[in-house]
Amino acid sequence: MHALRRLIPEARTRVQLLVSQWCPSCDSAEAVWSRIAAEREFDFSVVDMGTPEGRELVQRLRLKTVPALVVDGELRGVGVQSPEEAREIVAGTPERSGHSAPVGIALAPASRAHLLSTVVWLAIAGGLLALHGDLLPPGGPWPGALHVFLLGFVTPFIAGLAEHMIPRFMERPVRAGPWSWTQWGLLNAGAAVTAIGGWLVGPALAAAGITLATAGLALLTLRLWPALWPAAASDH
Image: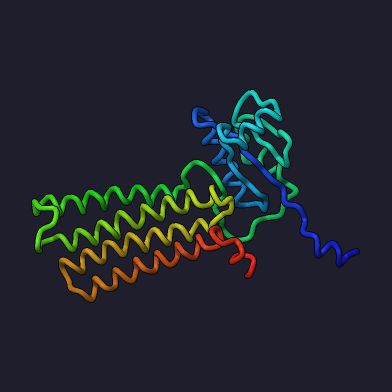
């Protein structure tokens, strides 16, 4: 009997937060449950009531308002729970080991930082091109502006959206917390060091900047790999 129990995995608690885009308090509810989902081991997802899954929950549970909390298919509350109330609801779940980003709709702070920093780098790259007065000049600042655009705007923009959207669509979390902030630091440091090295110091410093940016991309790959290929996570 004990051997059979080991072969049959225990069912994980499933927590669904039903929200809508027009709901003013849904972001607050998501923030509370995202915090609890980072502390406790349970399957957490944010479900928009406009999706097929959301409409099914609304009809089956006869929901009249959102945010609504559904635990293992049963309605457990409406409105915004406090962190203490949320912990009480999932008190039977084990503590989570390590950092992870639950599936949600609102941008996590690190993802928001990725996207906000791209605005600064886009302005810098655009300003360099405007100073020269030509989109594709034969020389001048064009190569440097292109590196700033690619490393400062394109790369963090993709990273910020990827770490937000992929967990939601793949329904699997990614490593968050220090992982995401380290990635953000590497990408932005890489863009800055590459720009300084290319214009003021020399190719050696520019190469160091490229190395920093490459390390940031490698970290992004490491974070997203288990979500894109779940089998990779189960092998470890």
